[in-house]
Image (cartoon, rainbow, N blue to C red; front, side, top):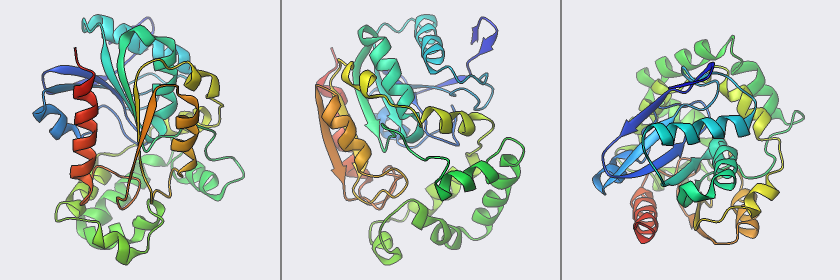
Length: 278
């Protein structure tokens, strides 16, 4: 979709009641975590690639990006939508819902960043700046995908501690037979482009004013064992969004869509969405 000089790439998955989904970091409109159950339950998922990801034009102006998403809804003739914001897409969902409350039926935050996240002093920030720079990210993801395709269980074991606070034995207890394949497929579709650098700027900001301005009923979903985005983030959002509720899962870590607790995640989300359909 063209917005003046800018391009917004997007996908539509399924048919039914519309959901506008803001994907997490290193992702794009090709994301698919949790989509199958939503489609089976009568929902369609509209996923724009956020600025700098895929073919979407890079922009550090988050409010302008949200204005483009509103134009996308206009083009698709969608008056109101459920909004889901995932991980580093949290700030986008927060700003969109505060800017356009009349277009939002409900809001769901999933493993989402809701307050200032990594700082330039953090080791994780410095490493991300190096390996996910626009000049290096394609090589980084190609190497990860190749290793994951060849040795999926070993690659997961090497990366698991970045997603979870649990020991590896405790992580294994929370996985199911599909988990390794889901993780492998994720690594094959991920790219950072310039989008993750833009995310790292957006996640430094204070969104307390925008959180307080959200009018829609809000579900905050998180794992008790998330290392990537700590539990301070859902608590921060819950204290500031007026009409909000929390669901803290005992899932294996940040990726709450995979593992034995995925069914609990699906049931909680679908129940919440169904409650607010017209």
